[in-house]
Amino acid sequence: MNRKIGIRIEDKYVMERRVAITPEHVRKLIQNEGIEVAVEPSAKRIFSDDEFKNAGAVLTSDLSAAPVIFGVKEMPNAFFEYQKTYIFFSHVIKGQPYNMPMLKAMMEKKCNLIEYEKITDDAGKRLIFFGRFAGLAGMINSLWSLGQRLAVQGIENPFSILKQSHLYHSLEEAKSAISNVGEEIKKNGLPKELCPLTIGFTGYGNVSKGAQEIIDLLPVIEISPEELLNLTDPNVLNNKVVYKIVFKESDISLPKDADTRFELQHYYNHPEAYKNAFEKFVPHLSILMNCMYWDIKYPRIVTKDFLAELYAKGEMKLKVIGDITCDPNGSIECTHIGTEIEDPVFVYNAQTRKPKMGFKGDGILIMSVDILPSELPRDSSIAFGDALFEYIKPIAKADYNQQYELLDLPGPIKRALILHNGELTPDYQYIKKFL
Image (cartoon, rainbow, N blue to C red):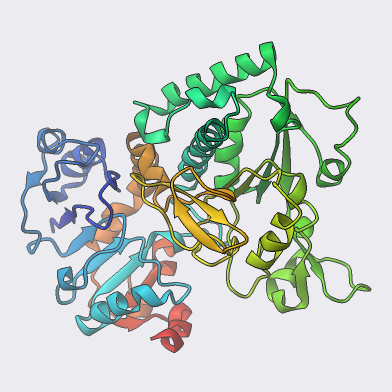
């Protein structure tokens, strides 16, 4: 039995240009798997309508004939149809209040919801993600932000020639530009106002690795968190290098009980027993790249109260926070919103506790673009589609009228099924309390 899938337009953000399934993947699905593909036309999508048409897809604004719909970001409540299957980043697994109306709409229409973020192997490791590209774009943007911020402050610097990620034609072009900055640093050094240039990364997963991939194009010396605290002797400082620091969970949080030793699994299971240990590092950082997963049950990494206390002592060394994690009012408490690509940064005044969009003002520059991988849309879409491809056929051909226990779906996809015919599946019953 042939099945049809639909690829929806992305309309949550003006600059969202990614797609979960590229024209090359569409061609393989049609020719090799016998799956029909309907694609909503989009003038902004990084792959043109003609590319999809030439791959064999049907261009149509009406996806009602497709029982399975693939997207990237959230879909409007009115878009969902009775007993259809939708695959996208739904952002509901933390009970996010802004998406509970969407989840309710899907439940009322007895929809099936597959969440990319929960497609995992048996050990719980994510299999399909944009994380590396969030890290890549986030680091490019943060270095660009540093250059622009310093320029506003009247400080000449080698980063001022950089551009925002989406203005480069490709990842390789962006990397070339960063490498050129690295050569300039090796040759002429950094301005004294910036030395030592220290860049800290919270976390060590795909997002952090992507961000480090960019920073490693500069002349980098990696030091430990403890070494960062002692990086004050002018005789050992080098103005022709960038100091990189990677922070693990044990650097960020400590047990409230001083007699208790940090244990990672205990931290995951009992975060309420831990407190912030990161604040001692913040005054020593030039850029903080926030790359780790966070939930409200964990201690915040940087609080508004701490920034107010730090700022009261005078101009901070910390120039930029690249909040790739981008949880509004979350681990970086002063990140009040996820910004948009066309308006990506704001300055947070720690004394007034007010943000001001743009590069000017007193305080710390925050880069918190919510859809960073869309700044590298072609590269990120190809990588995402490559990871997703093997699951598209079983998703398309599954009989969702079967009882949950009898569903013929690969394990990673079944683990990601949040709704089955409008009902929360066993692993996601906890979401009821947020509805």
